[in-house]
Amino acid sequence: MEPSLATGTERPQINTGVHGTTRAAIGPRHLRTDRWWLAPALTAGGLLAFIVYSTWRAFSNADYYAAPYVSPFYSPCLAENCEPMQAGPNWEIFGTWWGLSPALLILIFPLGFRLTCYYYRKAYYRGFWASPPACAVAEPHTKYTGETRFPLILQNIHRYFFYAAIPVAGILTYDTVLAFRDEHYEWGHMGLGTLVFLVNIVLIWAYTLSCHSCRHIIGGRLKHFSKHPVRYRLWGFVGKLNDRHMLLAWTSLISVALADFYVYLVASGAFDDPRFF
Image 1 (cartoon, helix red, strand yellow):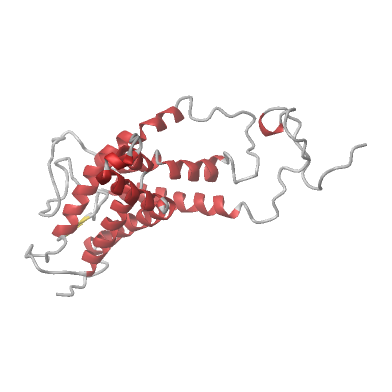
Image 2 (image 1 turned 90 degrees about the vertical axis):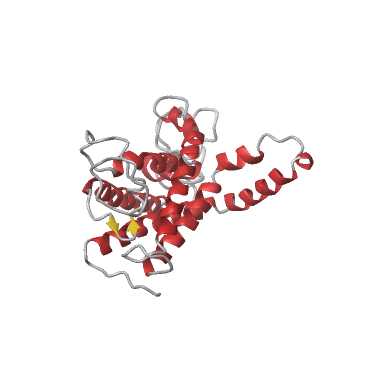
């Protein structure tokens, strides 16, 4: 009898995927001895926490404006049922027929951008679907179709969500500029909320520009970098950001939630925005 390679959970009685007849017949599910499950568990927990928080704030339709700050979840405001505010774009292009929270009209673009992002796809595929749960750990599914079928084939529209994310980041930049005012809309003032918005917009732009699609658009199709020195320098800059795409994905996700929560605290009266000058 052929000796077992290792002890542990025996090999499932299936003959597809990594357990196919043409693959190495390893008895255990994996040979890793570290806590490989910790990373996908923390990823799933972090994403789930943001989903719960953003869903609550998006449907609450309240406490999203405290002069001069407007929550990034609600800007730009595209419906007439927005809170009266003098900060941030308020275009009301959807008229009076929209009765739900105005955040639902705009969040589809930044959330779609993150949902189809290459890093986030890896994160929630591993964290929620165990596809695969970790490196060198076989996934529990009996077959793999990748992103060739509905609905995952829609991940291919990531580039178009990138195009939509650019103007959204521009609008949030405008909101940050308006944060240099006091509650009477006079310029030359700065509060704690201003710093919160500044950090958030820097991280939003860094994450957006570190996108793989952005890097490919700038220099992915160039055959001779020497003939395009400006694009080459831009491609190099975006490439350096791309090296930190995972870090920027998480820090920007946290910062946009903190910016919204800060506005919520001030708007609800739970916290007074300290002004530095």
